[in-house]
Image 1 (cartoon, rainbow, N blue to C red):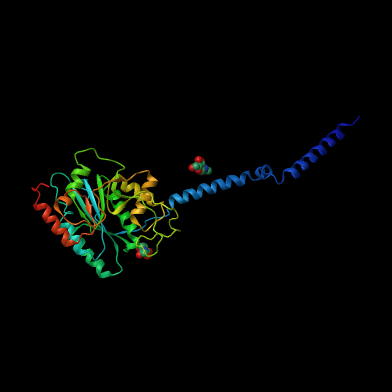
Image 2 (tube, rainbow, N blue to C red):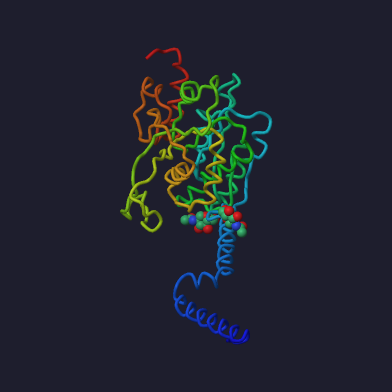
Length: 329
Ligand SMILES: *[C@@H]1O[C@H](CO)[C@@H](O)[C@H](O)[C@H]1NC(C)=O
Ligand SMILES: *[C@@H]1O[C@H](CO)[C@@H](O)[C@H](O)[C@H]1NC(C)=O
């Protein structure tokens, strides 16, 4: 008869033996590693979350620039129907003046359609030019400058500054036009035929000359896109940067999306990438011309934008169109 003690002894030995056998068997297997590493796994999970929240709070593209010249109160009294953002460079004094005196004139529509015109600039490396722009701003109060270096490669920053300005200082505006200083804009057409102040305001709306294209890999091109910056073969549909129009809610959406979207120097492509992330599809509108178009009264009555217009041409076109309002085409 085995005693209680030897029975217990046998049990212990069997237990140990099976335990050792189990360990030796399962050492390389995942269950053994898994058992031991439960706390480690939880730790990795935690650090993953910490990393994730770091990405959220430390953006890829923080746009941490200060306003050097700003017009924070320009929108305060009454929300405009349309904010016009014009990308410009320091030396284009006469182009800005031509726009002020023609289609960008804020007093064109007296009848409750408030228009607000702003010129967008960065900092020039030449302090004299900065000073001249500052004086210009003190006269006209229509210039906004952030402290990034103004260059063709930084054009995207200029657009984002404009989006930021609308989102911060003019969130109640209805529509925004982003354009360049060599563009003629048919404001009548844009305001009354496209945007229609009397109709219900649109949201998540974006329109212009839609381009469905892909990156140009030729280094000599103005639109060269290195493969490591943008590896995909196609761009999402985007509106030519010569002129696009959107409902003002999109300004904040794009600005916030840009904070988590790697910067690309091609401003219009970059805005297209943000729109894709937001699930907003740009509408094609044949009134936006991103090439030059010879002037004729009837032709220009049908357009919204025309590219490559000099300050002199701008005056001539404007004078002709406003003096011949009564003429039928
Ligand atoms: C980690 O993130 C996920 C997804 O956002 C969330 O469900 C989970 O609660 C988070 N865990 C911790 C520990 O914060
Ligand atoms: C763009 O602006 C940033 C900030 O001022 C500057 O560091 C950078 O050199 C500029 N890039 C170009 C290509 O000018």
